[in-house]
Length: 273
Ligand code: SF4
Image 1 (cartoon, rainbow, N blue to C red):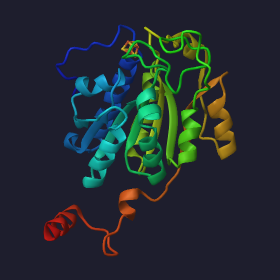
Image 2 (image 1 turned 60 degrees about the horizontal axis):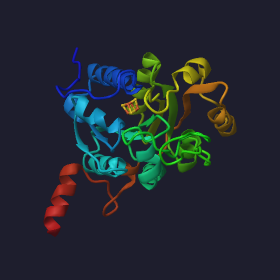
Image 3 (image 1 turned 90 degrees about the horizontal axis):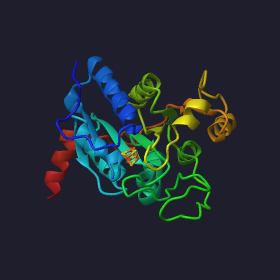
């Protein structure tokens, strides 16, 4: 079994939720590989932040994105070679602050890739500033008197944007998280996984999540029910909120009325240059 760990020194804080997420991702990739997907067909992109260090630690091919631009980079990879399984790592600031427009449009287009959102509720890399997912009252260098904004609910935001697979898990529930990630990667279309990820240095939410997280028995049947469950704080529901078969973006892009293979597209581009 491959460990999928690079030789780079790991500088995440001891106890960081990213370790659990890292273990779950590796487990999911391993399972995907054992089921027949070549390692060379699994690629990644990441943004900037503590989450982005996973790009250095995970032994996988990819392109490191700019801040908030990991999804744009990943979309390019996927559209250039649709047979690839593309995994994107994003932080809550990176994906829902600097990169919000890319996140919304990747979901809207149903681009065939997987976004794993490391939700630690702050900008950990730069010492704990308030992020789009910080809770009201959160104190950090930019909000010393307490955050006055309400956070997005990533699950309902992604459902509204049109994501065809939407799920939530917790970094300390490694088995559950790896199963969710595996299903997300296998899903044809845009898949979104929110990972509740404690930041022990600036937003230690272990106790909160350990006490309140509850795994759902099944996918909610009605949209309204899914939205209600996604916003619940006690308990905080984990699991798949939506799993729908919808037209995938790259299959809908047609040139001259026909879908073209990669080689046909290359030939067409050459003929035009
Ligand atoms: Fe993890 Fe927070 Fe440390 Fe970043 S600052 S490595 S998110 S514990």
